[in-house]
Every structure is written in structure tokens, then in C-alpha cells.
Length: 277
Image 1 (spheres, rainbow, N blue to C red):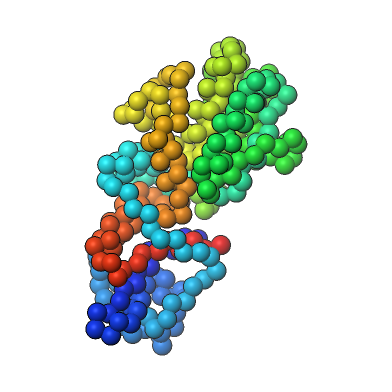
Image 2 (image 1 turned 135 degrees about the horizontal axis):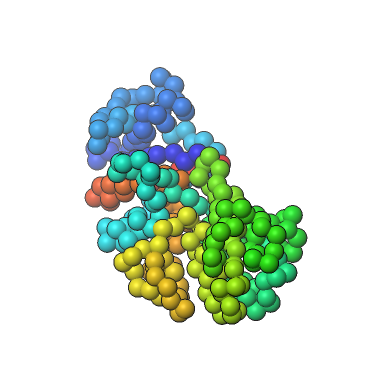
């Protein structure tokens, strides 16, 4: 479970720390004797408490991003709902290490280049771990071809290739598949490019953008020269940053950013994203 932003400030008169927590958080972790009063902020009730009670987990300072970046990130990270409203489906992410198994029909060249690519991701994104496993029993991610057993029925009709992921109730991705159709992806180079593209999208149920350059892995247009640009890295690192809440809908995400932005105006305030184990 991921808790809301916790705010703390400092009295200008007595120079003592003042701690306020959201009402829902107070009800779960405090008793009536801990309350020193309350205040209303942004239509929310914040309870002034005598001490800060932490559940098991870790608190990470909120990571700020400007609105220009967020307007690019949000349509990629948040899939729209089938209902006619302004909210979204919750964002998805990998919590556990990604363990990839390649079927024997994946060529050595495709496998080698793909693993070189995932190694850079493992190295550059702190909370995202990726490795290759030799036994399918140890894998939570399978990469296969049209000449293999159909490991994922939802990919059966894919003409060139596709990915499919499963997630749990916490919106954490727990299993992934990539299928490469070698009838249409006729060369190793094309298969490598397609596998990389699908893998990036599968790291967050990302929706390709119509506004980015075709060479971006988050772009919704074809290119055989896609590269991880500085913006691509920024999007991926931000999505996996623990300085933002995980598994939220866009309405929650925007409210979090609104509060975080306001907190920066007061140097005595600290906003922390608390992640429960």
C-alpha cells in the first residue's frame, strides 16, 4: 500500500516541528490522544499529531517535474477508461525483478542484442531490475515466436508481434510475454527493433504518443532507428521513481503533483511519499 503525502512544517516562533497527516492516515495509525487539532488544506482535513508513527516501509521525498514534462508523461503512463469520464485506469509498474526466458526459436543475435539493451535499462533505472534466466520455470517474462507453443492466447492473432502483461490488485505487473511473428518480421534486425519497442511499452502498460519524434520508443509511429533518447530515459526513470505514488489514477497523480508543487513554496515543509512494504 502507498500512503498519501505527509506534510511537516516548523513553527517560526518556537522552532519546533509540527506534523500534519491526512485524516484517513490518522484513523489507521493514531489514537484520539495523539491529536493536537486539525486544519483544512486544499479541502482536505489534516490532523496535527504529537508524534509521527511510521508503518513498516520507506519514505521518499516527492520528486518534482515541471508541467511541460508532465503533459508529455501523463498520456503515456495513464490509459483512458472505457467510461466517459476524465479519470484513467491506474498506472502499472514492475515491483519484482523481471526474469526473461527466450525460447530456442529466438535467434542468438536477437537474444544478444536484446539483452544488451535490457542491461542498459537495468543499469540506468534504479528500481527496475532485469535479467535473463535459462529455465522457463524461473521466468516471469517469456519471449517467443510464431513457431513456438502459444504461451499467451491473447497474442495469437498478432500479425507481426505484440506484448501482453498481467498485474495484481496493487497494479504491479507480475507477468509478461512478447511474441515475434517471423513471417512478417523477416530479419534479425527487424525482430530486434520490434522486441525492444514492445519491451519498453510493457514496462508500464504505456500508451504510445502521437506527438513524439518517430525515433522515440514512446512514439506511435514506425521507425527502424528508434533509440533511447534523453526524454525516453526521463520518462522511464520518472515512472519508476519512488518520489511519486505508484498504481494511482491520473486524478490522484495530479492532486499529488498539485500538493507537491505548493510545498516547494515553503522551505519548512517536507512532502514525503510513503511506500508500505
